[in-house]
Length: 148
Image 1 (cartoon, one colour):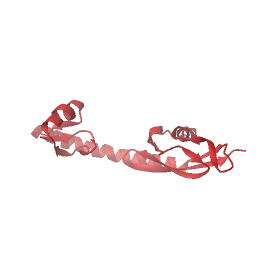
Image 2: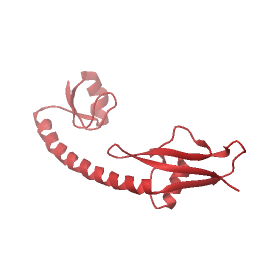
Image 3: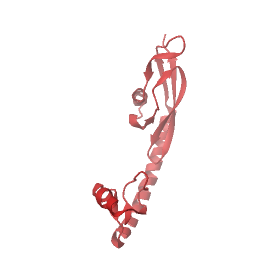
Image 4: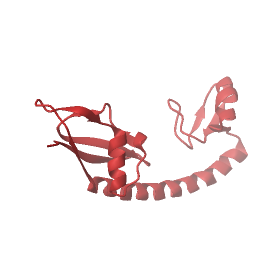
C-alpha cells in the first residue's frame, strides 16, 4: 500500500516520503495515529504543496537553530562543587544543573535536549552536546572546579 508520511517514523522514513507498507500496518497504526495519508492522486498533489511550505518552514527553523547554537556556545558553564582529594565530586552535575546554568545566562533549553550519557562526577573540563531542531548540535563547555 502506497502512503505519504506526514511525520517521521523510525525505521520507515522522514516527513514527505512516499513509502510502500503492508496494508495492515497502514490501516491499524499509521493512518489512525496521523503519521501518514493514503497516496492517491489528490493527496499527492496536496502534499506537494504542503512539502514546499514545509521546506520553507524548515529553512526558517534551521536559521533560528544556528542562531541558538551561537548563543549556547557563547555561554561558559562553571560549577564550583565540593570534591575529594582524588578529584571525584561528592555530588554530580546533571543535565538539569546545566539547564539551570544556561537559564541564568538567558538561554532557554529543554533539559531533555542536553545529551549527557551519565552525570558528570569528576573535576575538569567537559564537552556536552545539545541537540537543537533541524539536526543542529551545539557544544557547551562545562568546567567543574573544586569549591574551597
